[in-house]
Length: 304
Image (spheres, rainbow, N blue to C red):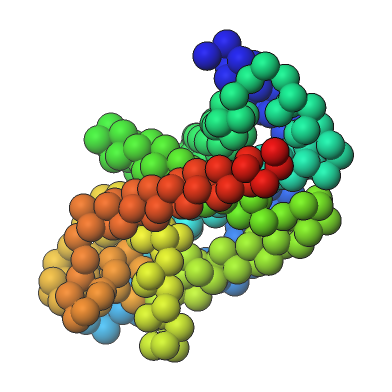
């Protein structure tokens, strides 16, 4: 256990001391915030207000605008938490690739420590760094939202969000570690990071809501864990704001909006529940872990 903790601490410190790595791990989140601040946020707010004006009957326009702003802010927060869970874990696991390419991993393997402990330390450091960055983002975002007139989330919602942060970072840490087994150079891993960082906003239906995507593309995304992670996070983050914003409107209007914005996901003609999505995410993580163990054993045998 002492060796595991020591290696995990080492990996975390390498990441945190590299300001460039920290910045690039958050770059996708910054891009999302920039796009939302420049035009996507206003578009989404106007879409909600127009929807309420068209189907909500006589309403208070000023209140609708304020509620729409809060809803979009929480929707954006949910998206960037998932983005961080993906990109931060990916960046931290670049430590393994760097250790491999610079022959430090061979030194670790020659030390009196089990190889599985080394592997778990990489994953654990990615999980810890991912949780830390997500929690930091959550705290800053909540302060900003409440300072601009939004309501604070309930204690129950916050507990659920923390649980989802832990679940998503664990799942994506395992998946990213599995990917490192196929990469031998830092430049190749950097290329993968660029591709993932670019696509995560689309795969999570952040840049474009689910309702704006072609049916074929949307159908494929429904089988990718990032979308279900984002959907779970949105359903919790936006729960209170949805009730306030769509108060007094037909239930069908709320249902359609949730599907359009990726707050809920429809598969097989029916909306999947949260339990299914949690199990789907956990299943993806378990499968990735099993494949990692098998691949690691194969590599260990070939190295002997």
